Length: 174
Image (cartoon, one colour):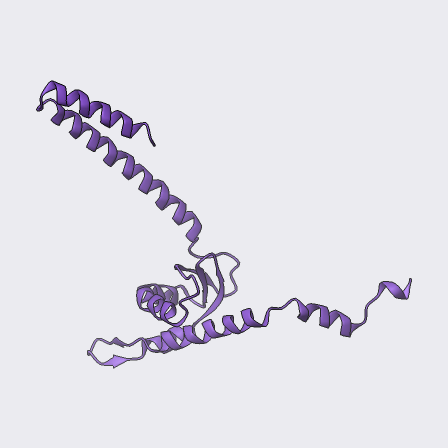
């Protein structure tokens, strides 16, 4: 074998670390630290109405894994912690948005520690919501058009013709 085909360990390590964006690493660490801080600030009341720090345990049993496309991926070590965090989602989201206004964090996705699958596939849910929203809008549009047609019988024929032309021109501009 030819020695020119090999690189030494120092060159290999240098090339590896040259590809790492230090600012992104710092930002990721800041988000992870803020996550723990926000969760730790959550207080709840027990059955005796005594306030206790429920967030500290949530922080101990969860961690930020990734942020991609506005979705913050959280790893928990038990599904119960996932539910607790989802219960406090609005509070946590406000804290993160206040701390990092430049970051786009729209929702959370969860995975169990050691599991390869994401517990809650947000993309599938988003697509389903979009389809449902479109169906609802079409139904509302049909109802409005039906109502307009019913009311057209109550007005003079000349005005009805003009309004029908206007309606048709609006409907063809979609």
